[in-house]
Image (tube, rainbow, N blue to C red):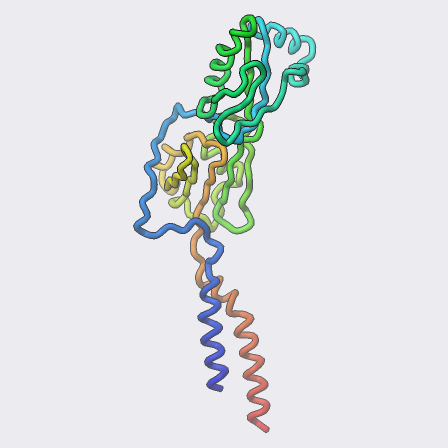
Length: 249
């Protein structure tokens, strides 16, 4: 009987180690989060590893207007509509220009910058740039619900991304939403509180490529402890039955 009790105690200790083991990105109580500066005018900026759909036209894009008038989808099938990857060093190799750095620019800024550069080679160049692979990763607060969301809109906001992920789950803490972002080679961690109306100030902030939005889940100690201990209790009950049978004999 003493051995059985000892086995039960050890099982409880071991099972407690797995309780809430699915919670990621834990931070200590005294952890200092980076200061999140709300900028309503902030737009998506081109980043390393972005894939750009690049199109170049002359004469201020007159050819594009003619094609769109006669064949609405023709501009996407032109020979000069090609994809280019922003390298990890922020450079991209474009026709005639060679390697240029447009990382850190918004899409309109990149289009204007490249149009100016192409004036050396073409008459009144008109450049179109589209980022085709920008995405964010969202953990809404419960296991198995994480998803990667592609950004079709260059100015997609945090609240839009959360909505596309189905919103904050029942287990998620609205007051503890962590935004993890890489800025200039450094990982930044911001803490956003959406539990009160004051959180609306963060809602319209624009997400950036490869952002991680992690809604911390609430601890469920009782339920997970019961789940982990159920097999142990069942085994202990069986052993007690066996022990009782042998003791009676």
